[in-house]
Length: 371
Image 1: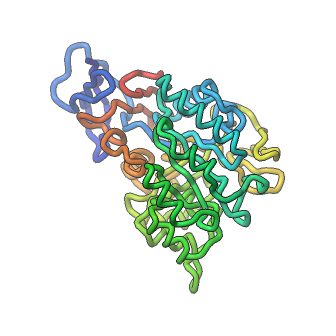
Image 2: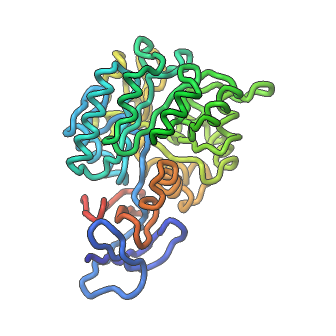
Image 3: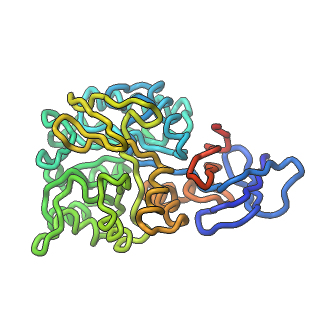
């Protein structure tokens, strides 16, 4: 049994001062009460571990190019230093053999018990070509039995799939959901009515709100309007490039408890690299912005504690709410709200420590200190 004394604790609901947190194995036993003599005092803010449901790469690795357990461990370590304690490594549009290989790598990582790898996010290939963004046109296609067989595997942990309603049917969405797959809508140019039918079929969220989706206008609400009006969750990239601060504020005001911070991160995170290849195009980093040869945004170099910082400093959101957007709401979205997203008895012992400069100084996953 281990006890730490948090100088400042955010338990998922409120801040407390000088609070003991006791955990045994991978579970939190108690929060508060008297601390044993061997308790370790932790300076800074202790908060629930951050959960990233859209992680393309990190540490110089890209899942599409590096479909093996070692690459996943490197990605997790790269993001772990910035507060991520659970992630869905994300594979973007690619060939069926790459999809299968990525699934095999995820299954192997879960079997090995790689800390923080809780499942997989397949972003495509069933997308809209007009809203493809940095996805390769030649691999965009309808959903076939081959992909369905991968998505419905039972050894992949949490499975999340981003699709465009133009390329999947409501019946296919229902089949996915009936098999335990979380379906998000994204990279889509469809209309409001088609989007709402996809939600009725079981789609429960939207991938990177505002980006690569038909806009809301006066006579056609589009995908964006459906996202804002519905009860679905929405991932959002707060890096200063993908979404205007005003638009982000509208979404947060319209959908309390439903906006999730995501990184949409790429290989340079945790490195000094300035170039990599994505979908056969060279991607260049300039400051905190990534663009491909076509000039399109190609993911980000955002990390999760950076997303929290940006949300607080540019969107007038409280630190408490920003942390919920990076932990609790993501946990709820993927069906793990009873295990992750808060520091409370019975929850998994995933938490981080960060200072006033938003630098992560320590991290625990399932009760094991990572650094």
